[in-house]
Length: 220
Ligand code: SAM
Image (cartoon, rainbow, N blue to C red; front, side, top):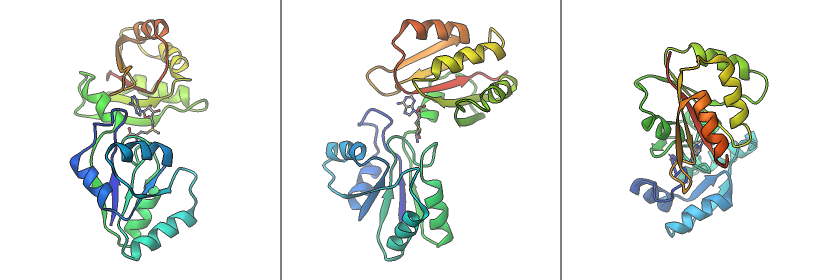
């Protein structure tokens, strides 16, 4: 079986009993960065063979994993944080496994997008998740689309680009439009900024802008 195992997005206690059981039981664990995954495994006294599987992994790697699965091995896929396949590697492997008739078992747990939405206070029965905001090309187009959205919009953003992206959003969103910016969820410096784009920009510029971000924009 191929297990798709969600792991913490910061706080190492945010892992399910089932995830730990599965990680203890499998023959090997596929992960993005072995050093990162080792920190988690050490915390739960799990000693297991780690094999790297990341966004640059080639098709030969997928073929190797599929052959191991066909030979009867149980394999778990984790990413550095959160749920594999959500703006993270995993989809290509799952698709190949499904094609080969291999059972794929998702082990649910944290994901930054859902964690952020749950604290937003916005109407989140429906929402649109855009993954990472494009760096250059497509950024303005996406922001214009978000400005017109009748559903709550969510995207991921990095430390280096958060201010620039918010500055750009200021040009296209109505001045009173509410947003929520979640920084470092579940970690020591977790901060949730709420308000208009201008208000959030002001708060962020006073803080040391470091960390990982989820940006949520209230629907129109
Ligand atoms: N697969 C992950 C998930 O399920 O959330 C997402 C991985 S993606 C490569 C990493 C991005 O997710 C970060 O750049 C950030 O935008 C967001 N993210 C991950 N952990 C976060 C956290 N603790 N707080 C805020 N955003 C986070």
